[in-house]
Length: 311
Image 1 (tube, helix red, strand yellow):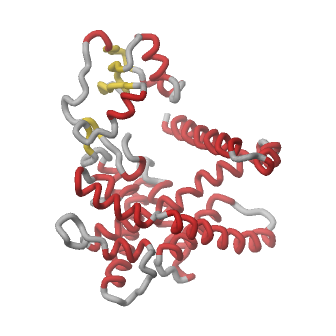
Image 2 (cartoon, rainbow, N blue to C red):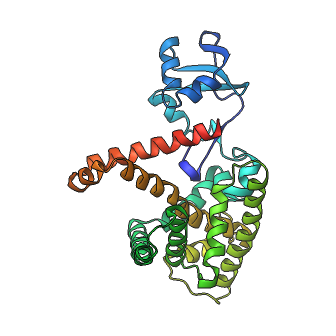
Image 3 (tube, rainbow, N blue to C red):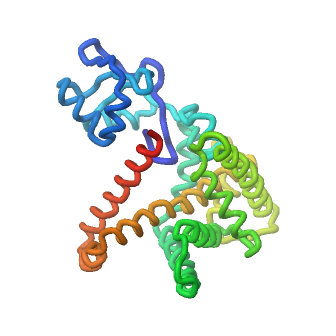
């Protein structure tokens, strides 16, 4: 919960009151897996309460619903980000020292850096970079006849976001950096060998990104002032000091990795359009409302697929 990827949160001790009238002790894990989107609201309606306690995987869990409940999750006096992400995710998906684990003014200052990076004109520039890489890739795909879309998307998104972010990416390194960035989200939640691969990828990617930051600060690289590499390298913390190179590298990866991860959703969109071709025409003729409905349904199914895979 919290500010999406850049602000996950956990409740501070004793911050949410739970009274005997709204406690349900039975474990609710199975019910949540069966109906992950409506389970909590349905149970709240049955109890006649907006808040109740249950158990998930045998751990006491407070469930809340409604507009006031949603507002609670943005109250910094009740929630903190520090320690919210489990250590295995800190050492793979998010990295250690990044914005996801900061609170208070430190978080606000670091988040402002990311907001500077994703100004509307910069987001548009990233979209244009992806479009250019997509068009180049399509020319190659036509000659191949059949392709595996997901890894191809990871490659083109890696090339696009590195160019956009001011990160040099020699042709000889494209496959290596794509594998590293993809392993951070593709295998982070795996158990065993997959998770170990993700950890190894995190260490290698952290060294690479920290080196990029060092080169920018030393003047060996001169990316545009609006680029992510430049903004992160020159960002000043609350105390007026620049971030440590390793931490700055983590934040640079927090720009690159999520962009490459959109390959997951693009693949789900392609699958949906292939399975229901009528939507191609509907979206082409739509006024925007159907576009949003289609995207939200793809996101819902992607989330549900993730829940079922975990189960």
